[in-house]
Length: 172
Ligand SMILES: [Ca+2]
Image (spheres, rainbow, N blue to C red):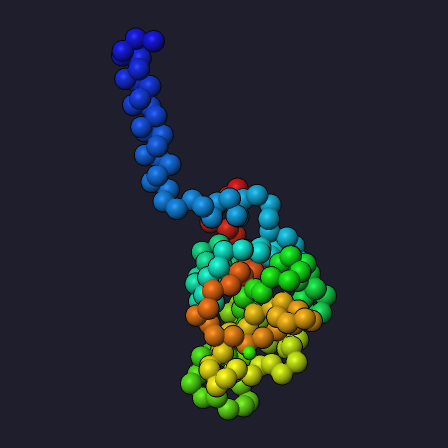
């Protein structure tokens, strides 16, 4: 190859690298474009092993055109349990708003705005353990793999969901 050819080749490679780098952090592409979204009913679900706080997990799901998963039946819960590998403690979208009061009753909501019409708390939960505010819900907790209220700032895996009719920003 001539020196001019080498220069052109280097120029082309540089342009390619600039194009790739200009996309920013593309690590999420591998998690959203490989068919890892699994359908149950009217939603697709995606298990993300990355350890994040509950708030960062919700933000991550929103960046994927969804929310943290809401759960509305035993069947759906078992599906999500299997998706999460059976025993990985995992954030889902339930929270009590982070209000400072510790007393009952606590009002739980889902980040996807669906009704909080189902729950499967582990024995003794939710409990604001040791008097610490635990405003966020995780699944696969304890021997029976049920729900626990936990401190939202702690890092765990998460499950995102999006409605099957949601138009995603990035086509894969
Ligand atoms: Ca708890």
